[in-house]
Length: 115
Length: 349
Image (cartoon, rainbow over all chains, first blue to last red; front, top):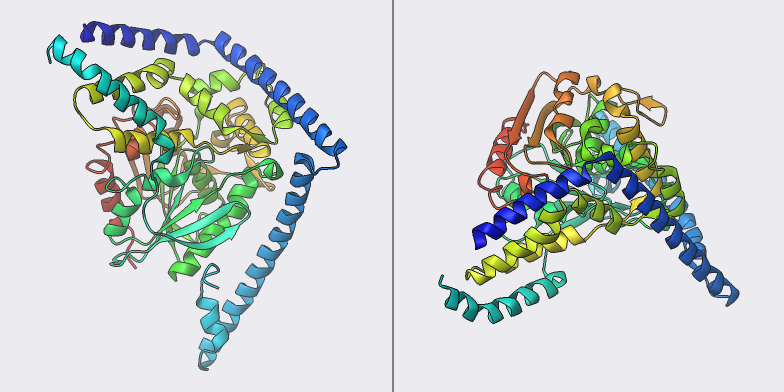
């Protein structure tokens, strides 16, 4: 009985894999994805409009704020990398000149997460 | 087992089956201790320290954008991370995080030229080394290949690409999204972060009976037969169900450049005005494909072997699936030791 069922399941698996590999299935999938995307967007826009009319921050407002935070974080990251580069350069120069490593050199070896 | 015995076991097996399914979200994955080395936006770089570090060159693990990287550290006693750490490697992992609407402008250039580049930089700083090994899996492998092509000399000594799409023109995905009827711009405009659940649905639809029926039937069968598949099933099922959204720009670029226009293999893909020329890859290269991989079939990867300039190129084709290759029950006995051996030979000071 089990062997018979497994044989049926295996044949069904092959048949469905054949079905989904057809170009027409790709078109069907594309249309379905577009429809779901459109419905989701309409629902999201309506919900956002309702919240805005209630003077409550909606998704769009949160997204806008988060983008501003991201831009600040990007600038901070680039700044930190510049500082680290300068620290490394200073440490290299000092080691070439034979001077003792300073606290700044030790700090340069620390990882960002640790510092 | 007799029919009567089977019938007698049926109620308990049914209850146990339901319990395994319902408690899957409570399963623990990613058990290894780790520390945060660096964060930027959603990206986090983790370090798994080895108490017995034997190899100078650290390993940086890079996974795809559409699933979580915990697959590298799935569960106790079945963790690639733990295996590498035990072998004496200093292991780092890039976690792309969970993007949301505000990340809609994250494109492939941001991932390769910023996030990955900075993760490489921070890995080397933390490890105190000049070179590392990049180990990419799935889309993570493609991002690593792009990175290696952009930086052929310098930080990356070894590149390991696992089930990596390079020329996906013959894949099932290409048949679904590569044609003109699939309007990727419309999807990307309407979803600032394309829901991961939709991408997961498409992945499962490639083998609908296997994913929606056979998996559960086998689970039930093994419980009925007296086995205890709870731990292994739940860890994998929880990981499979955790699908972060795909930032709209990255999604649009991935579908258009890889599946509609097949730019990478043709050398026409540019990130920030710099062309990705795969022939510039000079690192020691290991490419691994899986024979039963329906997401990134071997035929879509092997073309890379003829394109790269690396003097040291190794290729393995293994009899498993896209994820089973590294996370299947046999992985720790088969591919992990081989990978460690390959890395060991190329990770000296």
